[in-house]
Amino acid sequence: MMNSIQSEEQNVAGLNFLHDLKKATSEAHIQLEKVPLSMRLMAADVTDHDVYIYIRAMREIIYYGETVIFPLLAPLVDDITDRHKLPIIDVDLAEMHDIIDATVRWPRYNFTNAVTSGEAFGFMYVMEGSTLGGKLINKHLTESSSNKGKAARFFDVYGDRTGIRWKSFIATLSLYAIQDHLQEEIIKGAVKTFISIHDYFLSIRYK
Image 1 (cartoon, rainbow, N blue to C red):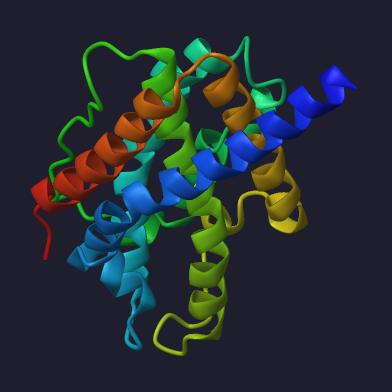
Image 2: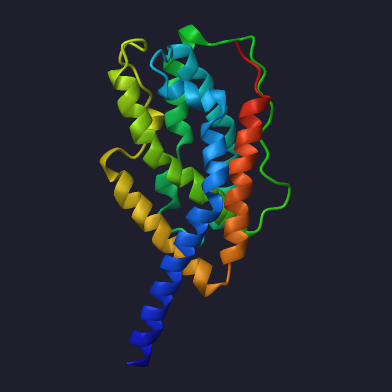
């Protein structure tokens, strides 16, 4: 009986945490979506060049995540090896070789110099959450005549497993948040991630 009560309390605490996390990150999330580089993807006249610039910028962020963040969370996130996106991005970029813009200089993306497990979870929350928005972008791109109906694999990286992978991740996230008292640290890391990507996007100079 006691274990059942404790389990229910943990479930409620987890749901409350996820609500607080979404609320705390909403403004930073909105500001990121207002950056021109992000807005162009959903424009009526989106072009192949717009897609290339976005994908190439995301490669810097994904590379950081998979070389710095993933090793920290590997002992905690069981299916983390199934969440690698870098190989998919590289395939997309290889297929865009005819529109590579050599005039763009790609600054190095760096989330923070020292990452705690809570901040790492916050970073991964933003990255995994982006797979949900990616499906909307993918739909828009495949229906856009200005883009000739071409999208990129990265925007639908998990395919029909997107919802399943998201639910699996937030279950793990909320478990460790409550169990290890990481709520504030995760929220801080997620907000910092949105802001750092926002600033990184704005730092890229392109035509």
